[in-house]
Image (cartoon, rainbow, N blue to C red; front, side, top):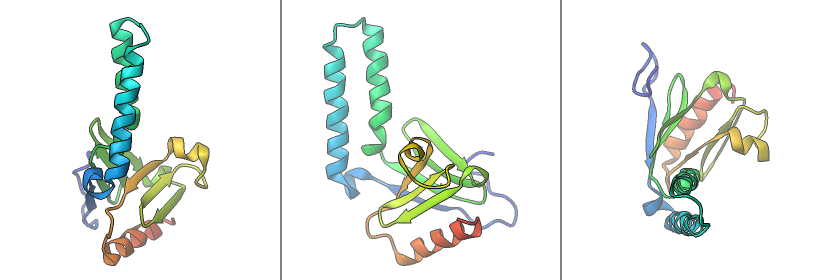
Amino acid sequence: MSPGTQLPGAHPPLEWTFNPWRQAIGNAMAGLLTALLGMVLVARLGLPPLAVAALALALAAALHPTFFPAHCRVDETGVGRRLAFGWERRPWTRIRCAVLDRRGLFVTPGFRAGLLASMRGLWLPVPTGAAPAFLDELRRRLAAHGL
């Protein structure tokens, strides 16, 4: 099922956008500068051009959530986040733990948030100053799925 589809009789999806350049400019700058510095360092390793390009792309892919705007969605099928490289989704059946705080929503297939869970989890940042009604609706949807 694509991210834009809605099940019949389901609640409309809860969608929002987080732009780090407007809402967390310090983190966005740090992420972008780290990616650029890493690319320069990779280029100076003296590797073949194809290896340099592959390593630089891998580094950019790993760091792009810090500086690329995210479109987030919570719907009847699960949660999702779209960044530069497409959608990343987690169906409700694969989510065992959800942590919602003022910075965002973190979901993971593990039974608790932790170091290993951070590798398999999905972070959906919430805009600074999000309305209490929005956060309450997000909590209600999590509770509806036992989280």
